[in-house]
Image (cartoon, rainbow, N blue to C red):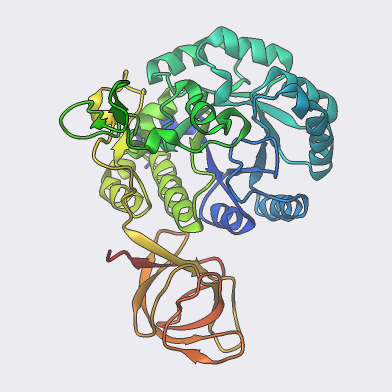
Length: 421
């Protein structure tokens, strides 16, 4: 029998799950573990210059892989450009047009004009960096030819719902659903540029919001006094991470078309964990709200397996108070350790991986599968590329062949271990 929830949800478009990717490996992980779309950056003109990012050839292979699996690719070109950037941006966007990504993410009106000229057949999405806080802004960008606008992180769900009611039906809204929160307004930060000379708005942020600060009085040089927001600590700009896994119904009802996960500098394990969890949560909700509620403990457990700085709901239910900050430290909680992705299975049934963290023969590890299963296996052998047996895998990025029991892994599964530190 069709439930009332299912009937209601069938009349509503299922939101896109948009997942970040910093490399080909992470892109493949995002695609296999449930993304409807991925967003990536090239080697220039994006806001994550410290991420590995994609060369032209890597981007071509990544777009081809995603499209073969029915997944879209959005490319960031969301710097706030200076005069010296414009000629290079034109050449870059002309090259992107040849690769045919599904969308470009743009913040700067000048970059928008270049993109319209150089990439006439590619959708343009307006980045959160453009401070999109009201429905007239959305309407302005719609009239310029934009397909989608990414909402400012300072908006509540009530404000987003009001925007949805005032914009054309085919104008899409994209909103963040998970990941790190920037302390500055819509991510437009001057701290990094002022303190280090590295411009956050041109992709070179040094994350000074995560630093510990002290105060020095002018007449007493060298005498540092801690800066206390309250008695708990001195990390006064250090926001908790956004997590809306418990509020899929509210996000959907607000009229959001795309749920965006932050994290274009994250590992394949992080992306697999977050993508798989939100994929299941969204799909469960579109079966019925009861199914979604029944599986909430699993979502909470799984989302805690990736690195995070505690969780907050950001601005979605009103302005954050002092509980949205972490005062004691700037470190991540890390429940699991990434060992590698299964690149292929060789003729002996061994798992071929590029090793990411140390593990030992005899260790119990987990095979993480896209369908939500985590299978515990024992490492019964580790071999280098020449077939030499090893007692452990201590060298990062070493190509290895790994034997496990039971033999249950397939290509693109993730290997992870419990973090005992």
